[in-house]
Image (cartoon, rainbow, N blue to C red):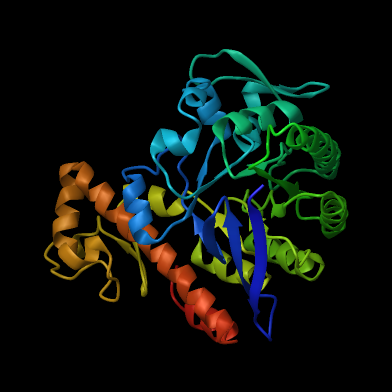
Length: 374
């Protein structure tokens, strides 16, 4: 298996750190953001677009790709050849999507039964089956099946979530190690997921159990799912001193600039979220002065780029007034230009964060960006 993680710098005043992550010969500098290619595409962009921005690691969704196109992907050799992606790929387990289908799923002894949102057909995800699917998808990093409770879940529901998550984690490791021995997963790493809601004792218990298992990396799940930001940050800071320093840490599904800052401060290495692409489709651009809503009339006659400090394709060539016109006219080009800019902005933000850590100045970077209205 081609998986290597090496810390390179640590900030002297907090848990922030830089590292190099190697996946199948692809080098990724962390902290890093992963664009979300739910159905083997980042909406409105091509693989070449992502490569030109500097991205080397993206995410695809197991639930959606299992339902459509399913086994067809095997004939292409996996998702990466299918979409002609030269970088590395992480696939989630599909569990989050299944558990969000509250009225269309039920627990079984082995896993969770659910109905397809496409045609209503019934399927079962187990700890083992989601690994088989991800093996077929050919990702470099696979995620275990976990039970993600809502942010306002009662103690009993969180306890059930932990029991399932930990049982599935142990089964996943057993199945993964047997598969790796038979070369089924020889080029794939497996990450475990910590749950526990907003209870510090539950989070500590889950972290201890997941870190006791030989996962390649440790993911923090079940945050930014409806809890308050105060509770979210409290849990991050509670976990930070106990996170394994020798494995990558991945905060799942979190995508605001303030949340990035807090999580990087707590030592998180990897992030993914649909926000930069979703916001682009709603006319929102990220800038070094905050978010910009291109639908506001004030931008109608603006000849300024989205961000005067940005050197992306969109900002080099097109002005706010033109992009606003495209949005109002319903032109797909507007969504592409905004998506390109937002993902370049995220890439550049993480590059600046890494540089501040290398210089031992992350807290100054943190304070400066916290003042911007995101």
